[in-house]
Amino acid sequence: MEKKALHIVNGDSLTEQVEELDLPGQIIVWRELLCEGPCVKEVGSLKFIRKREKFLKEAYNISSEEYKERFVSQLKKLKKAKDYDHVVLWFEFDLFCHINMLAAISFYREHQPKVPFYLVCSKRQKGEDEFLPLSRLPQKHLLNHFNKKIQLEEEDLEIANLVWELYCSNDPMKLKKQIKKTSNFEYLSSCIRAHIERFPNSKTGINSLERNVLKLVENQQITSFNQLLGYALQYQGYYGYSDSQMERVLSKLSIFYTLEDNRVVLTSKGEDALNQKKNFYQELKNEECLGGARVFDFLYDADSHKVLKL
Image (cartoon, rainbow, N blue to C red):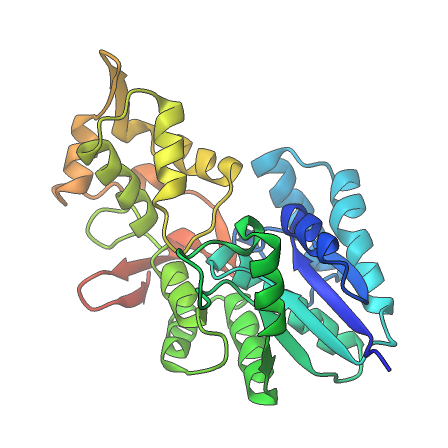
């Protein structure tokens, strides 16, 4: 008898790919970007939904109706999805996907009986030339990944729950300790590290991702803001930010670069930030949150890799 699978898939483009594989079971689409903005541990609770709606409205002009239709409706389906004897998680290697995945595991395990979980995650399989996200793999390679899916142990799921809980707490220092843990989530440590480096650098006030953008401006011949966006997306490492997320990053950094004679160049502030000559913490400070922590309540010390609470 064919075992009934519940597939939880990150985002619409990957869902289209998975649907084409015509696998048995039900598909739930996870449409959130929990790597940004405030989160509380109880996914789907009234407090969670209110916080997310407020953030998504302010940051991306997503209405609460759209949020309910696109995300909350899928959560309701997930809550009811009982008669499945295993769950298959389809999530990429980056921070964007991993935070969503942790929330999905936490939510499902809270509402449903314990069932085995499997993970389909991007990694280079034999016969594949390059490391591509799942949504860009040819069908036969995607099927190959599915056939080699990783069974998650109870210990893995407990680590996932703990990391989600710590991400939603206001203590990134505790989260940082989880980097050393080994689990079947091959990229979890890299994603936690990437997250920790999103707090403002203690010397400059800009974070690692923002510094990376300024280095691109310095090192590449970039002729338009649109081209800068393309570069920033291409060279963002483990973040997995979408176009609209990266646009927000660039807009926050607008004091550091400008367009002169068809070339994007650093302003004097940009040079000072990149050369660690001045700290822009006060100028950039805002009320934004990542998970349960207010970004500017902490500093990241690049030398010791420690997070310091202010």
